[in-house]
Image: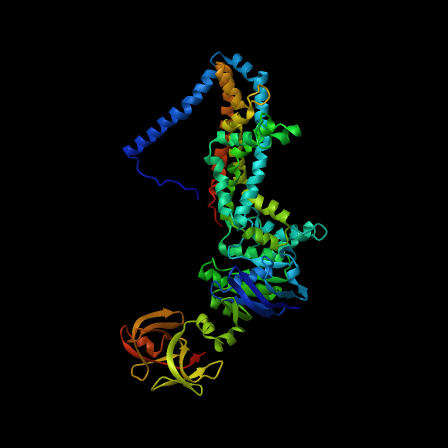
Length: 281
Length: 344
């Protein structure tokens, strides 16, 4: 059953609280969003359209999607593996692994970017090796990907762990005794049981990957048309007082966020029980 | 043609879950593993299923060294207390699972699988529910599906881990009968883990009583009940009253009255003896253990009394509804004489 607040008579205090919440939401979410749209279309539809199809914007979109397309599957696989380890086995250092998993949530994204510069940058630990083999990580796509991977590391795992803990191992054990191979157990039992939580985690991960600014900003180098992702592109345009361009690009990011939100809401509405990890048989 | 378990020991860090356990199950036998929680019965089941490995000992089935086989190759049907049905599959898909995951050259045809599923649905009397999902079934129905799923792979052994533990009393009793009938029809060697002595005695051909990872006694239910080999077995199989006595020549003397002794060994001298609630007589006058009536309650076909001695010891006794006990009232003083006692 979905949790629902008990029906209560609406008192003036309840109305006041609801009104407060509504005003607050309007102030901090709706107003900025409206502002983005207003600024983007300030000079009409034509300038807006030309702003978002200019080559730098298109390359920023392409780069953002590319980074997400690499980082999200990596973290999905890692998330499943981590959740599997944590919920299926007991091992020394399990608590540590769980804490490390939360690290990207707690440290500033700037630091998540900085560590890679310190490792792979021109004066980093591996600088000579990278130079010798002519591999570029910082100020290039690999750097953007690893910075994004680090920042979005916990999303899938954090979504799966409570669910898999709750579901327990009995179904998997039953499948093994019935003659299923490890492969069969994973694809026929484990994966179907976690698919909605996985989808949800991937969705959050994708949203974060595409919107990431701090870590990516550090490793990107802001090379126009080359290493500027959409959020960085917006910043560059904004700093150049190109508000139609900046806000035009921002509408794309906001649009992505809205799509994510709708999908997330749909998932929660349809599979809320599973996602809340409290469905019991 | 039987399951032979020899000298199995299993330790978890410094705790011996199983200590030198040996027993055999004959083909088609229904064996109950009975013991309190922590006695090692579930560990034993996991070893048999191949989910864990014993430290020492051997497990053979029909000449097959089970320890060299992985869990998936043992063909052991397992039924869990939690049912462990695949929640995203229908009842029919659950039952067919073990056949569908077979390597393609051993896998029966679609039609054969279909026929097996239908036959098993009929066996568990859920013919019309094949398309339902587990969440749409009652607990008892789910456990029947779990059994059908285990039977679908034509198991060499069927292992049931407290299968009725999550069900209410009436359903349990019903399913117990039904399980025994299924067993008699299919003839699969079955091991049934339970901590409920009534269930074990009611169902099994033989009962293996486990305590602290060791076998206390193996025997047919009646044998176990009539000739318990240890105080633990006696206490575990039913309510036990304990009193001191002097033993000699198979008679327990309580000072003024006495009772015959049942014991696995010849004991004499001062001993603690035990007696069952129904092996007692109540008298209005001594000799006997003096006690006051604390409670008087119906217990099925009998009347169950709790009596308290002047020293505070509480006895539990059972009597027929139409016996002299039915005239008693609360706080009446009675004298209790056991008609038969057990000593270990």
